[in-house]
Length: 296
Image (cartoon, rainbow, N blue to C red):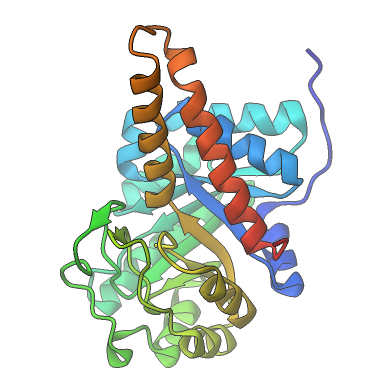
Protein backbone atom coordinates (compact mmCIF):
# COMPACT_ATOMS: atom_id res chain seq x y z
CA UNK A 1 0.00 0.00 0.00
CA UNK A 2 1.43 3.35 -1.02
CA UNK A 3 1.27 6.37 1.23
CA UNK A 4 0.07 9.52 -0.51
CA UNK A 5 1.94 12.60 0.60
CA UNK A 6 0.36 15.85 -0.53
CA UNK A 7 0.79 19.44 0.50
CA UNK A 8 -2.69 20.15 1.79
CA UNK A 9 -4.01 23.22 3.52
CA UNK A 10 -4.01 23.51 7.28
CA UNK A 11 -7.19 23.43 9.34
CA UNK A 12 -6.77 27.18 9.90
CA UNK A 13 -6.73 27.74 6.14
CA UNK A 14 -9.80 25.56 5.56
CA UNK A 15 -11.69 27.54 8.19
CA UNK A 16 -10.67 30.79 6.52
CA UNK A 17 -11.90 29.39 3.20
CA UNK A 18 -15.25 28.59 4.82
CA UNK A 19 -15.64 32.23 5.79
CA UNK A 20 -15.23 33.45 2.21
CA UNK A 21 -17.31 30.72 0.60
CA UNK A 22 -20.11 31.05 3.18
CA UNK A 23 -19.88 27.37 4.09
CA UNK A 24 -19.08 25.48 7.29
CA UNK A 25 -16.84 22.53 8.10
CA UNK A 26 -18.64 19.59 9.66
CA UNK A 27 -17.37 18.43 13.06
CA UNK A 28 -18.57 14.94 14.02
CA UNK A 29 -17.74 13.06 17.22
CA UNK A 30 -16.64 9.46 17.39
CA UNK A 31 -16.11 6.81 20.04
CA UNK A 32 -15.44 3.83 17.78
CA UNK A 33 -13.79 2.85 14.50
CA UNK A 34 -17.09 2.47 12.66
CA UNK A 35 -17.94 6.15 13.17
CA UNK A 36 -14.47 7.21 12.05
CA UNK A 37 -14.76 5.26 8.78
CA UNK A 38 -18.33 6.48 8.22
CA UNK A 39 -17.33 10.12 8.58
CA UNK A 40 -14.16 9.74 6.56
CA UNK A 41 -15.92 7.92 3.73
CA UNK A 42 -18.57 10.65 3.57
CA UNK A 43 -15.93 13.39 3.47
CA UNK A 44 -13.96 11.57 0.78
CA UNK A 45 -17.05 10.98 -1.35
CA UNK A 46 -17.97 14.67 -1.20
CA UNK A 47 -14.34 15.85 -1.45
CA UNK A 48 -14.76 18.06 1.61
CA UNK A 49 -12.61 18.69 4.69
CA UNK A 50 -13.92 17.28 7.95
CA UNK A 51 -13.15 17.47 11.65
CA UNK A 52 -13.27 14.45 13.96
CA UNK A 53 -14.17 15.37 17.52
CA UNK A 54 -13.50 13.42 20.70
CA UNK A 55 -14.66 14.69 24.08
CA UNK A 56 -12.83 13.80 27.29
CA UNK A 57 -15.07 10.76 27.75
CA UNK A 58 -14.66 9.67 24.15
CA UNK A 59 -10.88 10.10 24.38
CA UNK A 60 -10.79 7.99 27.53
CA UNK A 61 -12.65 5.24 25.70
CA UNK A 62 -10.74 5.29 22.40
CA UNK A 63 -7.33 6.39 23.70
CA UNK A 64 -5.80 9.83 23.27
CA UNK A 65 -2.71 8.82 21.29
CA UNK A 66 -4.59 6.00 19.58
CA UNK A 67 -7.24 8.24 18.02
CA UNK A 68 -4.54 10.72 16.98
CA UNK A 69 -2.68 7.92 15.21
CA UNK A 70 -5.85 6.71 13.46
CA UNK A 71 -6.78 10.12 12.10
CA UNK A 72 -3.22 10.86 11.02
CA UNK A 73 -3.02 7.51 9.23
CA UNK A 74 -6.10 8.35 7.15
CA UNK A 75 -4.77 11.79 6.28
CA UNK A 76 -1.36 10.45 5.32
CA UNK A 77 -2.56 7.43 3.37
CA UNK A 78 -5.34 9.08 1.39
CA UNK A 79 -4.12 12.67 1.27
CA UNK A 80 -7.53 13.87 2.45
CA UNK A 81 -8.08 16.83 4.82
CA UNK A 82 -9.35 15.09 7.94
CA UNK A 83 -8.48 16.82 11.22
CA UNK A 84 -8.73 15.92 14.91
CA UNK A 85 -10.18 18.11 17.65
CA UNK A 86 -10.11 17.64 21.42
CA UNK A 87 -13.74 18.51 22.06
CA UNK A 88 -14.93 19.92 25.40
CA UNK A 89 -11.82 19.83 27.55
CA UNK A 90 -12.16 21.14 31.08
CA UNK A 91 -8.59 21.51 32.34
CA UNK A 92 -5.23 22.77 31.12
CA UNK A 93 -3.70 19.37 31.83
CA UNK A 94 -6.01 17.60 29.41
CA UNK A 95 -5.58 20.32 26.78
CA UNK A 96 -1.81 19.82 27.04
CA UNK A 97 -2.27 16.05 26.77
CA UNK A 98 -4.18 16.40 23.49
CA UNK A 99 -1.73 18.89 22.00
CA UNK A 100 1.21 16.68 22.93
CA UNK A 101 -0.55 13.69 21.31
CA UNK A 102 -0.76 15.52 17.98
CA UNK A 103 -4.30 16.91 17.87
CA UNK A 104 -4.94 19.66 15.32
CA UNK A 105 -7.17 21.70 17.60
CA UNK A 106 -8.39 21.80 21.18
CA UNK A 107 -11.35 23.29 22.98
CA UNK A 108 -11.01 24.61 26.49
CA UNK A 109 -14.52 24.68 27.88
CA UNK A 110 -14.65 27.20 30.70
CA UNK A 111 -18.26 28.20 30.06
CA UNK A 112 -19.27 27.42 33.64
CA UNK A 113 -16.38 29.41 35.11
CA UNK A 114 -16.60 33.09 36.08
CA UNK A 115 -15.69 35.31 33.12
CA UNK A 116 -12.25 36.36 34.40
CA UNK A 117 -11.31 32.81 35.38
CA UNK A 118 -12.36 31.56 31.96
CA UNK A 119 -10.02 34.15 30.43
CA UNK A 120 -7.08 33.11 32.64
CA UNK A 121 -7.44 29.39 31.96
CA UNK A 122 -8.07 29.87 28.24
CA UNK A 123 -5.02 32.12 27.92
CA UNK A 124 -2.90 29.43 29.56
CA UNK A 125 -4.02 26.96 26.88
CA UNK A 126 -3.37 29.45 24.08
CA UNK A 127 0.12 30.22 25.39
CA UNK A 128 1.00 26.52 25.48
CA UNK A 129 -0.28 25.94 21.94
CA UNK A 130 1.74 28.90 20.66
CA UNK A 131 4.90 27.46 22.20
CA UNK A 132 5.03 24.29 20.10
CA UNK A 133 6.43 23.91 16.59
CA UNK A 134 3.19 23.33 14.68
CA UNK A 135 -0.09 25.15 14.20
CA UNK A 136 -2.66 24.07 16.79
CA UNK A 137 -5.96 25.95 16.93
CA UNK A 138 -7.42 26.81 20.31
CA UNK A 139 -11.15 27.30 20.75
CA UNK A 140 -13.00 28.52 23.81
CA UNK A 141 -16.61 28.64 24.95
CA UNK A 142 -18.40 31.71 26.17
CA UNK A 143 -21.91 31.11 27.42
CA UNK A 144 -23.26 27.89 28.95
CA UNK A 145 -25.15 25.55 26.60
CA UNK A 146 -25.16 22.30 28.59
CA UNK A 147 -22.66 19.46 28.55
CA UNK A 148 -24.21 16.20 27.36
CA UNK A 149 -24.96 14.88 23.85
CA UNK A 150 -28.19 12.95 24.39
CA UNK A 151 -31.95 13.01 23.88
CA UNK A 152 -33.64 15.54 26.13
CA UNK A 153 -37.17 16.04 27.43
CA UNK A 154 -36.51 19.75 27.90
CA UNK A 155 -33.82 22.38 27.48
CA UNK A 156 -30.88 21.37 29.74
CA UNK A 157 -30.86 22.67 33.31
CA UNK A 158 -28.86 25.86 33.59
CA UNK A 159 -29.30 26.82 29.93
CA UNK A 160 -31.13 30.12 29.41
CA UNK A 161 -32.25 30.81 25.84
CA UNK A 162 -33.52 34.31 26.51
CA UNK A 163 -31.81 37.03 24.49
CA UNK A 164 -30.31 38.69 27.54
CA UNK A 165 -28.62 35.44 28.61
CA UNK A 166 -26.90 34.77 25.28
CA UNK A 167 -23.25 35.64 24.64
CA UNK A 168 -22.87 39.41 24.38
CA UNK A 169 -20.86 40.81 21.43
CA UNK A 170 -18.90 43.22 23.60
CA UNK A 171 -17.99 40.50 26.07
CA UNK A 172 -16.96 38.23 23.19
CA UNK A 173 -14.61 40.94 21.88
CA UNK A 174 -13.01 41.41 25.31
CA UNK A 175 -12.61 37.66 25.71
CA UNK A 176 -10.94 37.23 22.32
CA UNK A 177 -8.62 40.18 22.84
CA UNK A 178 -7.48 38.98 26.27
CA UNK A 179 -7.04 35.30 25.37
CA UNK A 180 -5.95 35.31 21.72
CA UNK A 181 -8.16 32.32 20.88
CA UNK A 182 -8.45 31.22 17.27
CA UNK A 183 -12.11 30.18 17.45
CA UNK A 184 -15.04 31.06 19.67
CA UNK A 185 -18.11 28.98 20.53
CA UNK A 186 -20.86 31.33 21.73
CA UNK A 187 -24.27 30.71 23.24
CA UNK A 188 -26.68 31.84 20.52
CA UNK A 189 -29.82 29.83 21.23
CA UNK A 190 -28.09 26.46 20.83
CA UNK A 191 -27.60 23.71 23.40
CA UNK A 192 -26.00 20.28 23.61
CA UNK A 193 -28.19 17.28 22.98
CA UNK A 194 -31.53 17.48 21.20
CA UNK A 195 -35.17 17.48 22.16
CA UNK A 196 -37.03 14.21 21.69
CA UNK A 197 -39.37 15.91 19.23
CA UNK A 198 -36.41 16.24 16.91
CA UNK A 199 -36.51 20.00 16.35
CA UNK A 200 -34.77 22.47 18.66
CA UNK A 201 -35.74 26.16 19.11
CA UNK A 202 -34.51 28.59 16.46
CA UNK A 203 -31.03 30.04 16.67
CA UNK A 204 -30.53 33.76 17.24
CA UNK A 205 -29.05 34.64 13.85
CA UNK A 206 -28.79 38.35 14.60
CA UNK A 207 -26.68 37.60 17.67
CA UNK A 208 -24.36 35.34 15.66
CA UNK A 209 -23.81 38.13 13.12
CA UNK A 210 -23.16 40.73 15.82
CA UNK A 211 -20.63 38.52 17.63
CA UNK A 212 -18.81 37.62 14.41
CA UNK A 213 -18.53 41.25 13.36
CA UNK A 214 -17.34 42.49 16.74
CA UNK A 215 -15.08 39.63 17.92
CA UNK A 216 -13.61 39.11 14.43
CA UNK A 217 -12.76 35.41 14.84
CA UNK A 218 -14.41 32.38 13.23
CA UNK A 219 -17.38 31.11 15.22
CA UNK A 220 -18.25 27.51 16.04
CA UNK A 221 -21.80 26.26 16.53
CA UNK A 222 -22.01 23.55 19.18
CA UNK A 223 -25.10 21.44 19.75
CA UNK A 224 -26.09 21.35 16.08
CA UNK A 225 -28.22 18.22 16.49
CA UNK A 226 -31.87 19.15 16.13
CA UNK A 227 -31.36 22.46 14.35
CA UNK A 228 -33.06 22.96 10.98
CA UNK A 229 -31.38 23.25 7.60
CA UNK A 230 -32.70 26.81 7.30
CA UNK A 231 -31.11 27.71 10.63
CA UNK A 232 -27.80 26.20 9.53
CA UNK A 233 -27.84 28.17 6.29
CA UNK A 234 -28.65 31.43 8.04
CA UNK A 235 -26.10 30.81 10.79
CA UNK A 236 -23.37 30.13 8.23
CA UNK A 237 -24.21 33.33 6.35
CA UNK A 238 -24.02 35.19 9.68
CA UNK A 239 -20.55 33.91 10.55
CA UNK A 240 -20.54 30.27 11.69
CA UNK A 241 -17.56 28.40 10.20
CA UNK A 242 -17.68 25.03 12.01
CA UNK A 243 -20.75 23.05 13.09
CA UNK A 244 -20.72 20.28 15.71
CA UNK A 245 -22.98 17.24 15.42
CA UNK A 246 -22.96 14.36 17.89
CA UNK A 247 -26.35 13.34 19.28
CA UNK A 248 -27.98 12.75 15.87
CA UNK A 249 -25.01 10.68 14.75
CA UNK A 250 -25.29 8.55 17.88
CA UNK A 251 -28.99 8.03 17.14
CA UNK A 252 -28.25 6.93 13.58
CA UNK A 253 -25.78 4.39 14.96
CA UNK A 254 -28.11 3.11 17.68
CA UNK A 255 -31.16 2.74 15.48
CA UNK A 256 -29.24 0.95 12.72
CA UNK A 257 -27.57 -1.33 15.27
CA UNK A 258 -30.97 -2.31 16.69
CA UNK A 259 -32.20 -3.13 13.21
CA UNK A 260 -29.06 -5.13 12.39
CA UNK A 261 -29.40 -7.25 15.54
CA UNK A 262 -33.11 -7.85 14.93
CA UNK A 263 -32.61 -8.79 11.28
CA UNK A 264 -29.63 -11.06 11.98
CA UNK A 265 -30.20 -12.57 15.45
CA UNK A 266 -27.75 -15.44 14.86
CA UNK A 267 -24.90 -13.30 13.54
CA UNK A 268 -21.88 -13.09 15.87
CA UNK A 269 -19.23 -11.44 13.66
CA UNK A 270 -18.93 -7.80 14.82
CA UNK A 271 -17.81 -6.52 11.42
CA UNK A 272 -20.97 -7.94 9.86
CA UNK A 273 -23.28 -6.68 12.61
CA UNK A 274 -21.74 -3.22 12.40
CA UNK A 275 -21.86 -2.84 8.62
CA UNK A 276 -25.41 -1.46 8.69
CA UNK A 277 -24.71 1.11 11.43
CA UNK A 278 -21.58 2.25 9.56
CA UNK A 279 -23.52 2.78 6.33
CA UNK A 280 -26.28 4.59 8.21
CA UNK A 281 -23.80 6.98 9.83
CA UNK A 282 -22.10 7.66 6.51
CA UNK A 283 -25.42 8.54 4.85
CA UNK A 284 -26.31 10.81 7.75
CA UNK A 285 -22.95 12.63 7.61
CA UNK A 286 -23.26 13.09 3.85
CA UNK A 287 -26.60 14.83 4.30
CA UNK A 288 -25.22 17.18 6.96
CA UNK A 289 -22.06 18.00 5.01
CA UNK A 290 -24.12 18.80 1.92
CA UNK A 291 -26.28 21.11 4.01
CA UNK A 292 -23.26 22.87 5.54
CA UNK A 293 -21.76 23.37 2.09
CA UNK A 294 -25.05 24.35 0.45
CA UNK A 295 -24.97 21.42 -1.95
CA UNK A 296 -28.67 20.68 -1.45
